[in-house]
Image (tube, rainbow, N blue to C red; front, side, top):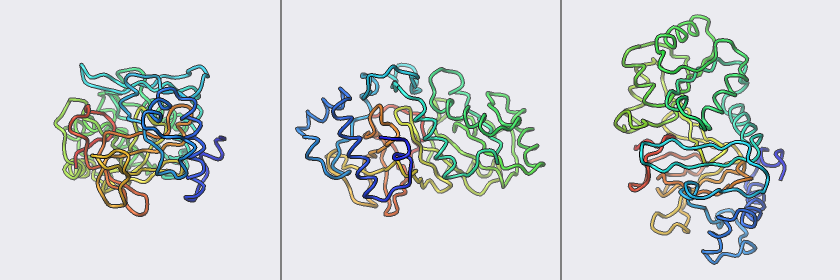
Length: 325
């Protein structure tokens, strides 16, 4: 499967064909996925439609190497977690798939990266190794080819002055921030910057009480003087992200799909507009597993957009946009 085929725009028939090809490859070559499919008494040859593909529980990334190739591992991405929580490890054998995925998705939703200044307020991620979000943000900062782009840890005064500078020079600016850090910032600094794109990546990291999305976005809009809050939906175990430009409604790039499953019957797929467990198909995750059952609750709409409604009560607290709404 070539990158050109995976990352090209697709109609439903083309997506279905690519997904089935990747499914059969992974059901044969990914040991834990092969075992999972076998345990369901499913013959991959009998799967003819995308929605019939079994989705691997994402928790297995905590206990298994989920890979579908014998190629050497280039990067290991690890999830964040509070003390005592077992974290996930994503063994990436070809990092170029991730790079192509997030660059192409950014271009699709926001245009040419060189038009922007990228500011990243991601302290919890910067303070540990193995963050896929930091890998992406670092690359976007470099790709922007802008000396004003960069990371901020707890130096909020520097960030405030950089935002004021961006406003004065009228340079399109994206502030990517973990939720608790954005809230910490606006407690001490208020700025009225309507043109600013504030993109929250979710996650209180145990630093603050979880908030419903409407309350969170209202506070952030008031603190930054913007009309809407953008969001990124991604996680350690995936190589693609969905984006929201407001109201918590996310859209996927063409190589990614969201469907929902019945919470009482994981193999039963729900129709549009019905809330259920989120299943993610990420064709860029070709050397791992592209079909994952996530511990989030969500709702998918007829146009393919979706919203996250919360998380399963018994799932670990995660750091990737799992806001209860």
